[in-house]
Length: 129
Image (cartoon, rainbow, N blue to C red; front, side, top):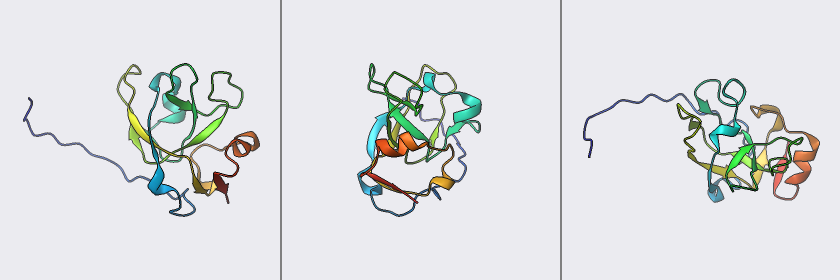
């Protein structure tokens, strides 16, 4: 057991992409597959930002960045990263996260834009404004 005190700093989480509180109480616990993300694109500041569009990888059941051109399951938008998550220092560590799968989103405020196909994937569960 390590009882050494430590200090860890966090930036402010920007959830301005949420259009309402609807659905925020039903976020699902998921695992991010860090190896599928690109540091400069998906976590340039050392953390995965909230609002990141995610798809579920069929083979592992973990989540990676939504990519309409993929064929591994991430071509289907599953939802959005609900809160920011610190990115591990190595891409073999897969952190736990929360997925907003139902609710309302301000698409202009998302950290990465979602195309029409992604919006169609979540039609009826997520409303875009």
